[in-house]
Image (cartoon, rainbow, N blue to C red; front, side, top):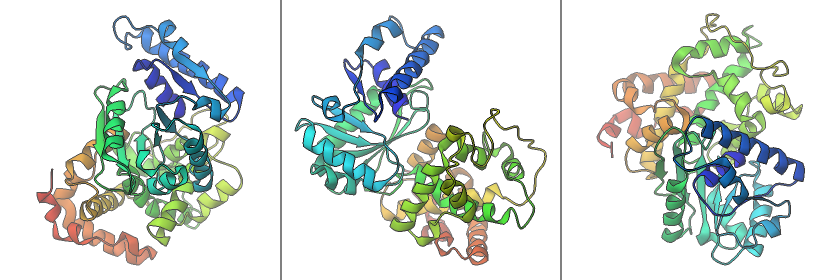
Length: 378
């Protein structure tokens, strides 16, 4: 994620971009990937007229010392692991060692911006700025305040986001009216993981393979939920669920299958093993071998319910921005298009599911049951 944001920042014409990590080898390997990415875009004529990789790369500076890296920074993107304690330690250093005007933007998936702001001792200068993989391609950016974030900081964050180019077209920036753990997209996706975790824990008992779970997802998604989780990192998946377990509901507690894999150090593609074995490359999944056990429509119903919760909480004023950021950030349609036609059916489905698996968080909220969200497009 950090490399993707860096690549976009270079491409966007920022005169000085500093890349920092805990080991020099990480930075060196990252710079190689960034240059490769820019040259690939240049070879396809995607960088724009007169823009070359050779002209951009000198603007990239590598620095393993965090204090030196941020000594004259105007804007800092933080993309460290989804661990509150580690992030708070980083923000303490950022607050103590960067210029007084510096703005801090966290790409956190689930951690509250307010907690990071407090750690920095500059809460008015901290925002959440959540990108999607890869940031130089995917158009969506979610920007969110903490409880004490200033309007000026938000405005600067939006301006910076709009200046970061991407391959898929014009940026779609979703501004959240108030703080929400997981922003918009991860609220929807992680709420559906309550059901997915339950499914995973039933596979052995029901003699169902993970390939069959992904096959059940069919053509509704580009890749199935198991393969996608391996791409994103099971450790990130696990830590995000643990964060939501604390902030939103105990029903987000990671399941037994996920917990076991993470405890054994199997984090997915990046470690060579997760739900699948990646040593030999991308897993080959036969989508014709369905189990008929995992129901993608349930995932959509849960996402619609969570979207309605965001409307009830005042995180967003209308559902259009939810559908827009889902599509631009993940390539998947948001739940409201289909939800307008199916909300009564999906409400009943969620009530039955909540009873079946003992997860009360999945009960339909008032706005979903009533269908009144239909009048809240913008």
